Length: 482
Image (tube, rainbow, N blue to C red; front, side, top):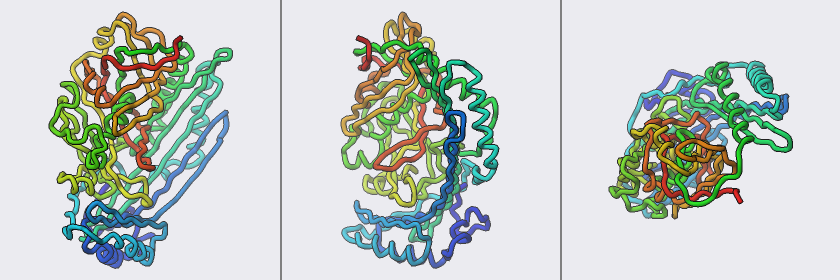
């Protein structure tokens, strides 16, 4: 939960002043002194516990636990940022950081940005998932998954399963005394299999997670569903043939294919790229940038979702931000710095990987809203094309919008019906251009299962993606067919 009051009797929310030598009043005074006369800035305190268990080749291959804590002190003047961090939680360390960040004090407006709005909403429980289930039970679950998976098909040659969990406590203190606290759980279960026939081997994968306890991952029906999905994908890939190449109609499946939307379009709608005019969407607010019917939102307020945050890493409450509405560009995702410089309001998208990183505008859960077409109708409308269901890696150029994405599960569409699975298909195009080529939007919006991780500027953060089934006309497909 997040709390914006200056006092709290809840130990977990008052962590930094009960479990360290820091004094609340003295720390706030140091922050006020360090940031005096700055346009913006904050002290970001963080304590994180994380663990992982990996079961591979029938045995526990790895088990790790990590605990870290520290602070990041940021001062903002105009477009300049002074930032210092340390894993030493002491008044002396914060004072030294203050001396460093004050070095940028020049050319500012001498008008301190106002504090973020306050919130008492709660999107996830503050309970620590790492302490809810003991070590032996976590290992036993992975053993059970391994045994169950191998019993499903004698063609299974390798099984890998892993559990990952973290618990992060943060506190943000501003020069004006405004304080925000948040406690963030995050868990994830991954299952992958390798199936073989003769000399050919193919892989399948499924994962699930979110900002909650391990309990839902330990539900037998839930993890068994992951196992069967991984096996299904591997089996499909064993039957796949060489992918065709050329320009064709592509139908994108619902859910995880939204990662293409995230990478090829979402990053281009972040405030920093648009302020610096390095995005293909720069200067286009109010202009049509997509086909009619396309609405794209970024929503950090969805309960227990992987990309959700009660407040962002600057203390701004997250929100549901409409980026594109019925094809018209309506807004950007903003942190405090870029919003101020662009004369806009922050949208709760200021995120950082850890206390050792300065925040920047990042996505939370980004997805396209549903349309009115039945997915079967969309497939039936395609005489010859490609049905892309799952994606692996991809590359995107933010300035031009050009992208290349590899499909991990795809099929030929022949005569309006799903045909043979294909291997080695890649989608090649331009993000803004693709939005104008969408001709049918399904009514089956689906979000991913909680496995997304987004990279930008050397930082990674958890994120969510999603979309309905889409028909895209005239998309270039790279294939392996001769």
